[in-house]
Image (cartoon, rainbow, N blue to C red; front, top):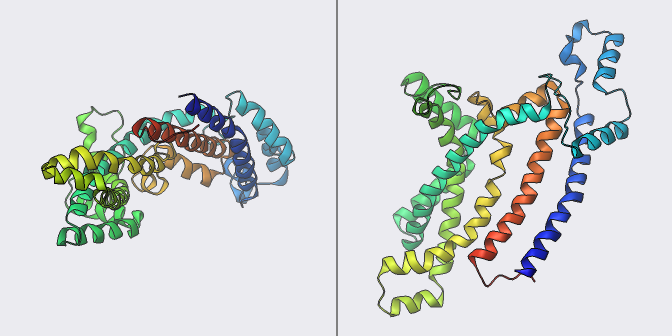
Length: 317
């Protein structure tokens, strides 16, 4: 494990310059984008130059960009991401208040995708080029190509407006646990469709690669049943590449889904990001992009560690 430990340390040290570069690029892009946070506090038609200058001075926007970035970086290293322009509270408090709602929704969507995608992918691989396989392939292309905003609106129109089976918007915050389930149905299905199609297609490809291996042929030659060959020998190795695919979708856990959360008025990180863009809330935007970037970088290291434990053949020496 010494090689793995050294590898993890090197990767974690590399996170620091990567985050620094990411924060510099995001900071520059945010400030170069059209719009001005001062217009959020005073209507544009009634905004005079003196009022704008006072607000900019109060928000610290009257300084050169490199000075603003340096001050932000010094505070961020200490865990202080500043005050939100729109909410008037510390950014960390605003983000942490919205994070649980996003975690609940994303965990539900990813869990639904995995529960359905793994058996669908396995059966599709075992019945290659069958009607079922062609159906799964068509479903995968449909799920990957269907716009989330259109699918969300169609589900809302059918199940909420016409049938009245599910709430239109909201997350049922403050309601008892079971009473919140109807609020999860539509956004979970919309978010889960894309990852379900992605996971199922990849699971099929991974399973096809494994069942062609010599050790699977040997297991069958020994007279082992199809169930034992598939679930005891093939599935375990076919699941290994899925770790990477699932890891690539996990950044949504803290990044949220901007479009879906905005459509369903879900009080999560994605909607917070959307509101922050409209308000030009620079501190919130910087905090969200930094948190998401750090999560992605650390998650890559975690996936590598999981690989080492799942497959002893992998060495990081």
